[in-house]
Figure 1 (cartoon, rainbow, N blue to C red):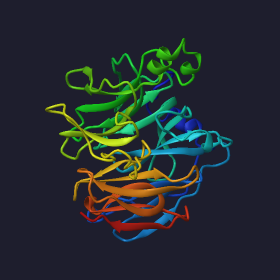
Figure 2 (figure 1 turned 90 degrees about the vertical axis):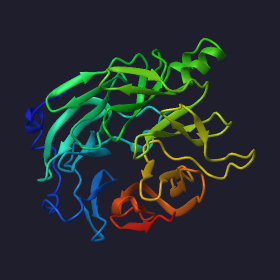
Figure 3 (figure 1 turned 60 degrees about the vertical axis):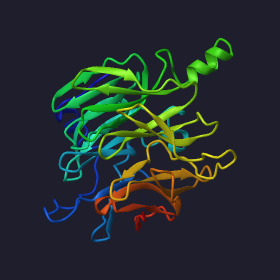
Length: 345
């Protein structure tokens, strides 16, 4: 990676350039932490219990927030900062399009850049506790940052997506071949080489054992794996049925089960954008953002058994709320207003 930065030196140097308006005061222990959304280069924070929403001012001229990436300890937002002239429509953050390279920053409670985690990175993935962060660098290698230490993982493939297990021991990675780049397929030496270069699979990395293994070996797309709340299964999207569908993989038996679009011709349940899928623990359902048109997405829910699919309406960026019994998302107005909807079993 070009740079993994510790401390606040660079942040201090950019203090006059990057700023946000003041975030809400620290919540009391009885109050749930807010969830964050991104709209027009600015963060929105929402308290689901109080149904209160605050749109935070965008950064000063010179930079915009390109992605909201999660939170670290203390519920501090992690974002990817981009130049002010960056066009988000050219980068959707999926597994099959070239994501923008930016600087990964953590914001403090005062709304200022608290520290930078990486310079020139693809994306960051905070762990469930927020004490660790998995970083994908510009070469699509993975670093795990904890405190002031950074650890480069020994993974031969190129990684484009990462998910943490609940106990923070395992990482589920979406990987491409070692010689893959986003434009490599255009230079492929024949059909076989082209198919090899566009193939991706799931890869499991055990941080305690410091070892990884390939989970899937399908000549197509297996991507966007996320762990179940108990860590026993991985939900992912695959094209192995001929069209994109949700599947689950049991980590003990390694059995793969298709859960949507099972019957030929029944392709009526769309899959989700790779960065939007949430496993809701209360009723064991999945909430996700499905693309309806190039400009619009809908929020969908479905049981992990493939039953009870629901379309909650036009929206984006689903987040769990109320202990996983509800989902909150930006509605069709793409404004600070949010909707909270109970997810039915």
